[in-house]
Image (cartoon, rainbow, N blue to C red; front, side, top):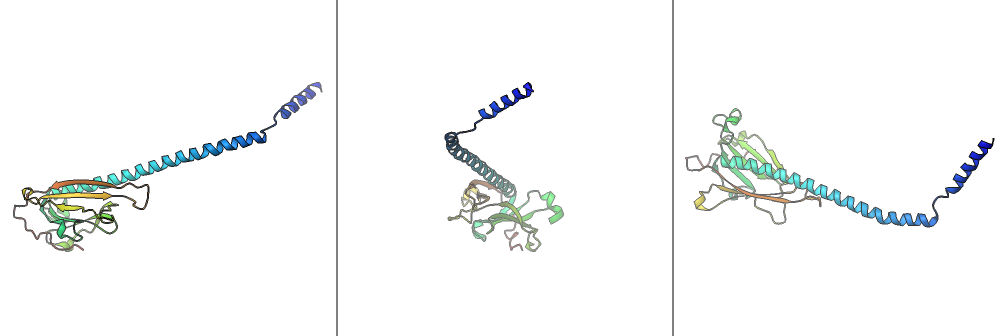
Length: 218
């Protein structure tokens, strides 16, 4: 009985000692939280925005890089380059007669696999591509999306995407390429990037007919 009474006394003293927080202590704690939490959320929001910007910039870089690589391959093997200023829409469309990857295209287009290729930036901010056999635009493969978020046409001051260098010393064989890419222009976190380069096609003095890629693919 004495042992039980002693335990009761000790428990009672422990409970009585745990008085909790005073009102003043609670007010101070709440004030500290009121200062710390906005700072914490501000830092977190800044980190999230930075990560989102990096993601959008990476996407834009990838889109533009892959598009320019494909354009460069086709142009360098181009036997006939058409002036983008004469296309529709002017300066946003590129048409060439090319033999790049000719052997792999034989099953689709027949020997020797030379094709007409056309790129254009549509009103959906897409760089799209179509191909067809020489003089047969009715047999085009259909449009394929090469890159999305290409905003050259959508900018307040449109930026020319394709231009044939008029320097006679370059033989009208060099195409200037300028792609302005933003994967989500309506998002304030998205970054707009611009890639500018030029590619030179083959010498076009080998007797290739200039009308080989005339016509409009369906």
